[in-house]
Image 1 (cartoon, rainbow, N blue to C red):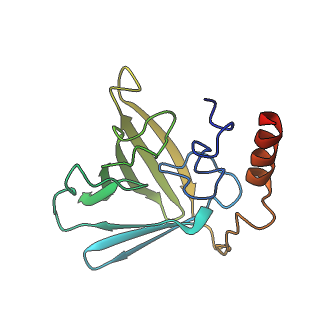
Image 2 (cartoon, rainbow, N blue to C red):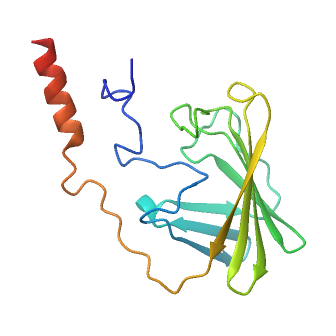
Length: 169
């Protein structure tokens, strides 16, 4: 079944449920707000207002039987670099074809007052032959994070269901 032919497998991003991590594109609603508080870092994404609350206290990952949309993240500092290790993705998560076996390691390093270097490495032996890494420069912005209203006027799923019913008839 093609993912757009059945509402049960309709992609999560198209349904406005989840847009997964890491986020690659610098498209609309692509701002992040990163806040550090005692013992935690929170990364709030403008797209769908996903908030990842990441403990920095060295606790282990959740039991492997517990699966989360954006995975289970644990952070630590290596010098000036924030390193976030994420496992336990949901089978319904999808990053470039990787699902519950995805292992994500992100690195945020401030390289100037107005720029972060965001590098991530992904691994999944069931999807890729080896791990791979990408780096995206992130610029500081004073722009406001806006409300993300994905379902406002989104008639796509209704149209797909209507077309499928007509096809069945």
